Length: 477
Image (tube, rainbow, N blue to C red; front, side, top):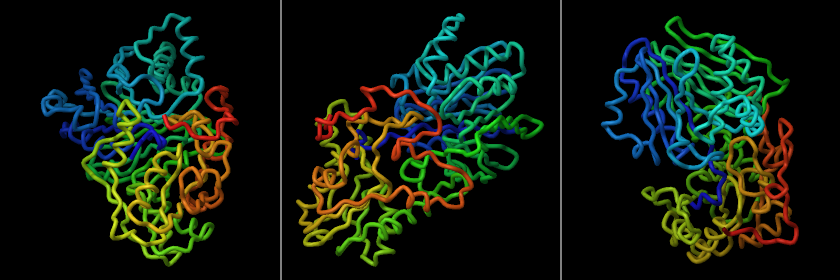
């Protein structure tokens, strides 16, 4: 899939504290492997044996970033953290790979962060004026500098709480010193962070699927605004002030999270299945076959088929051995990657009226190529159904959204979008319908990319966020 035409996932964080040395480097490795869908640009790990913190970072996938020799170097630890990264802010290079390891007044800290601070430039400027030095362009380094600054007068837990008063935006952070593992979730709860247990070990991860990968049990989600600190005495929780309602990113359930995860009490799989059923109610279609765009559209397509009574089938086959095509530097190479990665099953779709279900449309260029592929394979009609509302606004909180003028839904009607993609009909799940899919979660949600209404005030950059009305055609670049 051309990832220039998908919202890029955020990042994934993982941490583990053990009472004894249990090859935690392997637990972190497999935990990060389970979170690979959240970031493919770089991976890193830091471990402590109680005396010092050792770390390793590399570019690419987890299996590429860590060799057996790298893991051997990290043996002997009793606690550690890991990170897989997409560059929503900061360049994609090894200097910006995480965890970030730094010296501060009380020793050594290692930090890994998922999210985005909306006041990072203001904070970086103030810290620089006060003499702080920065070696990266990461939001994480700003968080680390604030904690270091407050640690002059406070112990670590209170220094973190003081830093949380200054930073605005989304963040799930795992961090450690030589003897403690710490998890932090932003007061709005925008980024997920879960707590688990493996025998006598505690585990933190962006998603519960990472617990399954190492045989750990899910305990609970870290609460918005909560600081959890784990040491040899056990688990300690500190609650900082929070707003009246939380704002978990609802795109976790639409696309980002792995299907087998549970976030804030809601099964991602069941939410997507319900989205498909609701989509069939809101936008029925006269068709012979329902197919899903692999992999993210499959579960919603199953729900659509169940509700509509139209048979589900595999109309598109995914090549599992093709890498992420968005990292190709030139558009024509990414376009070729779509054709290599997906192929239509001609004998399944030929002569059929097909409902094609996908989770979202960003630029629309990939959707158009898939529709062309289905028609070339003989599909008589193609009706596209999207299991989320139109993405018409940019995200400010850790998702790499294109410029707003490049979003297909920005300033265009559904009919105009359908004409660009080349479908016989196009239907999006309503925002109220999407909210129904996550009922029972006990938390609120951020729907800013659909509605333009955000949990906190954000600064608008005209070039990035305002739709250029005369340009009615999406940018293919």
